[in-house]
Every structure is written in structure tokens, then in C-alpha cells.
Length: 278
Ligand code: NAI
Ligand code: 15L
Image 1: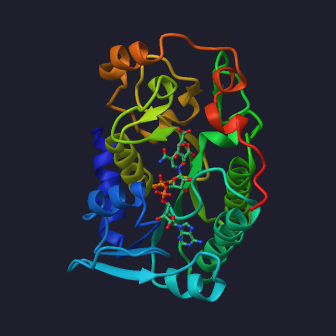
Image 2 (image 1 turned 30 degrees about the vertical axis):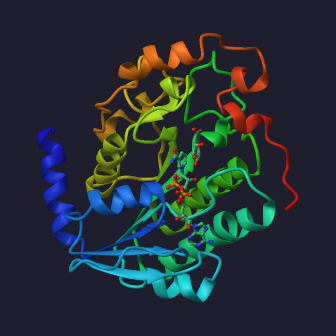
């Protein structure tokens, strides 16, 4: 780690009393709960689903993100938020609305009310899923989402930007690629983000002295990537892992890349999903 990063870490972590992790029953929330144990004196972990019991350094709070009063109580006393809660795949408008539209508004309003200064917002590559795979894009290009889920992430990113400009709340708008223990298909050779790289990015976002409101693509150091993070090099986060060890296996399973929309566009299968009505 660079000297500046070490200094930043000391400065911010010594001030961090309580860190809220939403979506703590989900896959990335579980990774964060285990991996961010030392990032604050207290971890407050929350989900609408059942969670493991609290360890000594934890508070476990059940909360539906769609419940504005509940979210207001949830955020009280938290210095920062790692926001992994919400609908994480393409679904009907109602659940997406409750968790990802109203829920994100409730979260930012609670952060504003309680003086929470920094948020890691788990956005998604599906905010830009209708860019083609032969394009390399960065965070400065306009979003082209590939469904209602992607649209909700674009909304969350814009709300974050609003609360930055209006109220000075800092957010890392992280367009995560495919964060799983290992890549699951050929597309993920390009989109994979290791849980370790996610944790290192999360820690960096929490510790850097000045964050602002950047868009960051959450992707490992894979051989081929569609996303250019050079505009956020100042953050000092460099992915360490790569999908390369799985290339031979996944290419053997899927030797051909077709010409269907899910093979042409970055969002993969999401671009071919219908608009679910329920
Ligand atoms: P997940 O589906 O495993 O976890 C999401 C959690 O949010 C679940 O535990 C769920 O109970 C909770 N949740 C859903 N609706 C809620 C509500 N109304 N109130 C409170 N909690 C609610 O998803 P995962 O994979 O852990 O993803 C975490 C975040 O990262 C999500 O926002 C997802 O959109 C985003 N993301 C994840 C990627 C990945 O590859 N895992 C890729 C891109 C974005
Ligand atoms: C996402 O946004 C989803 O939350 C995750 O489950 C994966 O489907 C990922 O995108 C992806 O694009 O692979």
C-alpha cells in the first residue's frame, strides 16, 4: 500500500465509530461483514432477511429499505454506509421501486438528517449494459441501462450526485461487474470482480481523505476489460486478482461467442430479459 494510503487509513479509521452495512444477509453483504470487521469500532449490519447473530463488535438491525421511518432509525449514529441492500437482479417494478428507488431515497434522506458523510453505493454494470462489448467505456459516458434494475441503479447514482452537490455527502458510485468467488461463464472472464478486490476497494473508499462522488467500475485485473478506471486512478485502488485461471475451463465450456444481443452487449443476459409485470 502506498504511503499516502497508510496515512489516510490512520486518519479516517481512528474517527470511524460506527459503519452501517446494508444487505448483510446477501452475498456481498456477507463478504463485507466479515472483511470490514476492523474498519469501525462498531459494525451495524442490516437486512430485511434473517442475519447471523451479532458478534461483540456488531449490532444487527432488521430493516426494510422501503420503510422510511425504519431507515431513519437505522442510519442514526453511523459515520459511513456500505450499501449492498436491495434488489440485485431484473424484477418487476414494485420490488425494485421499494428497495432501489424509495429505499435509496430513504437512505440518503437519513444520511442527510444524521450527518453521515460517506456512502459506498453498490451500483451495477447494468447501468451501462447496452454498450457493446467491443467498446471500452468509462464513467464519463452517459448510462444506457439494460432493464428496470439497471435503471434503478442509474437513479441511485444520480441521487448520490444530487446529495453530493447539494449537501456534500460523498459517494463512491461503484458499477460492480460480476462479484462472485469465481467467474461463472465466459462473459465473466471480462466482468469478474473478486471478493478480495471488492473489499480492498471498499476499504479504500472508506479511508481516502477526500472522495467526492466518482463513478468507479468494480472489476478485477482481468486480461480483457470493457471499463476504463484511469480517471479514478487518484483513488489509489488497483485490483490484484484476475479471471485468467478460469479461462481454459470456461472457454472449453463455451467455445463460441454468438451474435445474439446477450453476446453483443455488455449486460449479457440482462439485455434479453422481458419487462416483468409482477
Ligand atoms: P443479494 O441479492 O445477494 O443481496 C441483496 C440483499 O439485499 C439481500 O440480502 C436482500 O434480502 C436485501 N434486500 C432486498 N430488498 C430489500 C429491502 N427492501 N430492504 C432491505 N434489504 C433488502 O445481492 P448481492 O450480490 O449481495 O449484491 C449486493 C449489491 O451489489 C446489490 O445492490 C446489487 O445490485 C449490487 N451488485 C452486485 C453484483 C454482484 O456481482 N454480486 C454486481 C453488480 C451490482
Ligand atoms: C449484477 O448487477 C447482479 O447483481 C449480479 O447478480 C450479476 O448478475 C452481475 O450484475 C453481472 O452482470 O454478472
